[in-house]
Image (cartoon, rainbow, N blue to C red; front, side, top):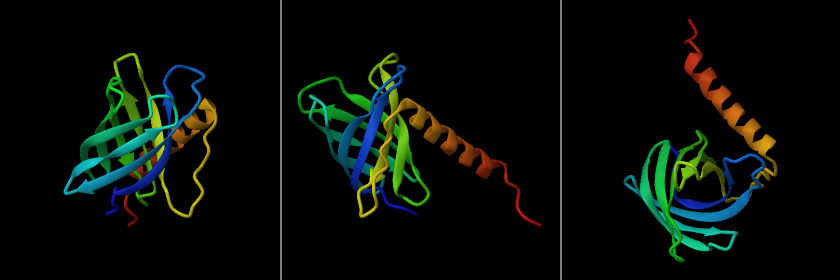
Length: 139
C-alpha cells in the first residue's frame, strides 16, 4: 500500500468552461489515517493549512487559508503506484472544480494546460477504472 505523506505539486481547475490551471505546492503528513499539512497556492490567496483523513486510496481534507478566505473541501484518490492524486473540490455548490497532484520526486510533473487535456485525463482514469471493474479472472 502506497503512502500519502510527502511533497506534491499540482493544479486545480474551476468547473466553469475555459478554466486555466492554478498551481499549488502541498505537503501531506499522514499518520494512522489522520492527514495534516500545508498548501501554497500560486495565486493571491497564498498559504493554507490542511487537515483531513486518508483511508487508502481515498483522501478527504479541508484547506483553510491563513488569510481567512473561505475554506475549500477536497476529495480525491491516490493512484495505485502512489505518484498521483486526483479528485474534486468545492467551496459552495456552485463554486467547484477538479484537481490533480503529482508526487514531487525526480520525475517530471505533467503540465496540463487546457481544459481538453484535463477532460482527457479524467476520461482515461474513468476508462481504466471501468476496465478494472469489468475484467473477469482468467480460467
